Length: 109
Length: 115
Image (tube, rainbow over all chains, first blue to last red):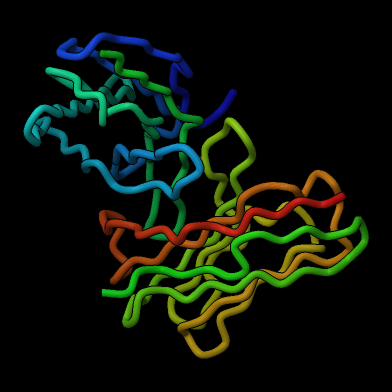
């Protein structure tokens, strides 16, 4: 079993839809959490950090449930430009990040 | 400003050949990471440097893999006697400090194909 697990998708949604991605992690010592976005054949880029209280950045909302070791990302009012792979990332210490295999989103007109 | 750069961007190697992959982190970034990303998977951690010190090399898959950052800036990942299973994208990332909440900035990667 992988340390960080994500539903690979693909998620195919129409423009304007709301879509949610989930991620579970197995290491209870995990300290910090992130969502990265990776476009096809490009490098990952930070989308947002995930805080214990939950946080929102425009159309994006991230939630953390430490008891269930679960992270989520909600995208509202999907745009064509949101099409990408979304990577869940978990850090147990300063030096090591563990990535999920990503969830692929395709937003269609 | 300049981001993380990597060279070469593409490398084709014959099985058994040695390769060296270079990473130039963002100037002043203390932390440097190497990852291996196979097709359809997320990046897998290889090794981590804090300045010139290699603090974690637990992800290096075999003793054919070696990384260094001798002056605390540029880093080189060397793969000896390449095998077909080494074919992947090798990503380098850097971050400003050493905190676990630091953002990692990734380079464009080196796409290695071993024939």
